[in-house]
Length: 78
Image 1: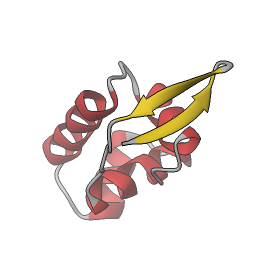
Image 2: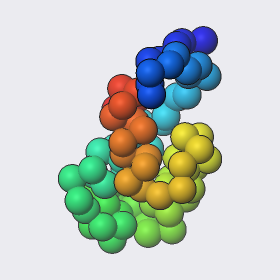
Image 3: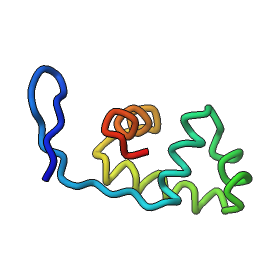
């Protein structure tokens, strides 16, 4: 268990762990690459990248890639 200071209060970080491929995907998304560009850069199919994205959304409890990038950066997951 780790506590994070956010919004003027301490919140619990439940030990969220991202896989290396998920971290790479978020980093590439933070650079402004599209799903197609990310798939090409990672040498994966578009469906695989969409699967990574869905897994990230679930783990981080976010609804879009922008939220995921900010969440991951804020909590130093990447």
